[in-house]
Image 1: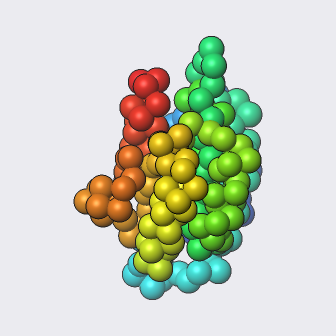
Image 2 (image 1 turned 120 degrees about the horizontal axis):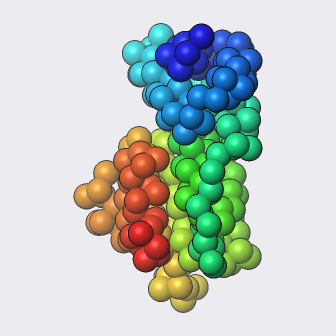
Length: 209
């Protein structure tokens, strides 16, 4: 049993992925490799299946939950960067219950020394704003999965401006239906296409790189 087997189990939404993750950790396999080459790539494979109509939304939901359980095991043993004063990040998904990408970004930001506050999914702009003002982070990270949420992101930016707090926060956005050009047009401070890009962008925006 190796990481490639775990990757296939995640892509196939096979519950044995949990046991395999535990075995790999017990065998001393690098947890970051398990996460990146097993869990993350497996989720990308599952996403490809969805695009090709080989699986459906319930499969994505089950896959997300399965991956989440595996990630929890991995998080317990991951080395985390030390930070004198952790920068706070609020992360959430607008208008969608899909959380695979958001959860992965949240995990990697935590590993890299950020204090991450995950405010969940299915958020409307005003509700997202209320969470932001409650937590008062240095960075807002927004996940967008479906096209209708693009306008909701623009609403969020408008709310921040109208409430006079836009300059208090850096705003990072990403997701399958987004692009760097779009992000720049609507006023985001940064954009990321994947988990690695999100961590890099967060460090650059907050001056911790």
